[in-house]
Length: 175
Length: 300
Image (cartoon, each protein chain N blue to C red):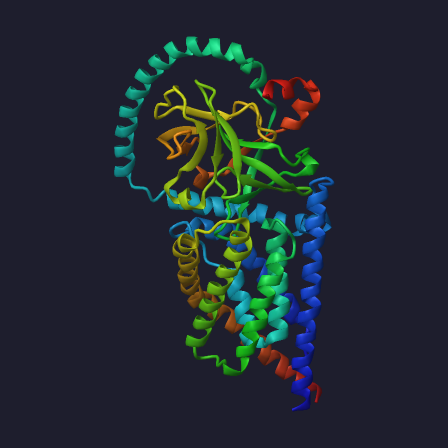
């Protein structure tokens, strides 16, 4: 069912996403905010392919972030994993040609992710300036992420469609 | 129908398994941090160092080319205007320089008093290139392309030009992570250059866009702090070497308790344009170890 090729392509997708996010996006930051590409990948795979794959993609995306930028390994992994898993619930509602649902899901995911990040990394440290963080980080990041989603969603969609078509072809060959 | 149920069951299963792995990793890394064995980031980051970091190093060149390219779009007119401004600034600087030279004599006396020139003597530095910055919008952390293989260790101070940039928090074999002084979770013990009044410099996410950092807990005594006063790292900091320039005072206000003053500092380093940094290969701990108890006594 899940071929090696798909796994390799996922790995490439995550690494390229991470490299872009850590190296190119700081150059194109708007209002010192960068879009959350890893979240786009995680959420997209989640609602395109279901809970299980979303969960794994999220885990590895988060792990990569943890290794490089986290204080403790595992925190982002768990956060992104939950994002991938929850988006998996919407697989049944998902249609390729409708971009409204993906946009709404990714925006919602990013918002909740922002809230969780604030809660875990700042509120628990006794930092109560929630309104400020909402206004200057969570909301701008969400808007910018939506903007970038319009481009990257189609790339991920196209890759997924190609993979699915190929898998169907090879499956029918064996039957 | 049955197959579908099985599928959703197994994905729930996976969630629990991966969640457990995540929590175990979290606890392990927390424990490792607490015990502070070596400051190394462990096996996972060693793997990352040999896979992802080389890619970052390669791509970084492209990124730098891109930013150079965008910079070239600055029109001739802007450059001319800038030139004019710079000339004007130059004149001002000459005047300022003359004034400073007068003050220098006075300062020298102070320096001698505090044996400062001995301690701020040229530290040995290693150049490194910034290869990646933090992907989240919450922190101001970046990665440099040198690690423990190049002799870097945790708690080494990082500078760019004359100003303090931050401190190394994690070291891998070929890369290390630097937490900048404008990061929200950084506190630096600092002092005013001329009066030696101690204060605490705190990074603040809220101020990053305005390019400032905050200082507080400066004693509200008779010493006047003029705007533009240099703020340097203090002798009582246990992580930062003494006498590194943090920035210049922009604004001072007396706090409502009338005991302390606080205000804002413009950092000496432009954190948006960081490409190359210098890592000081001596840590404060080395100096303390070398001098034994004498530092502790003076810190009192």
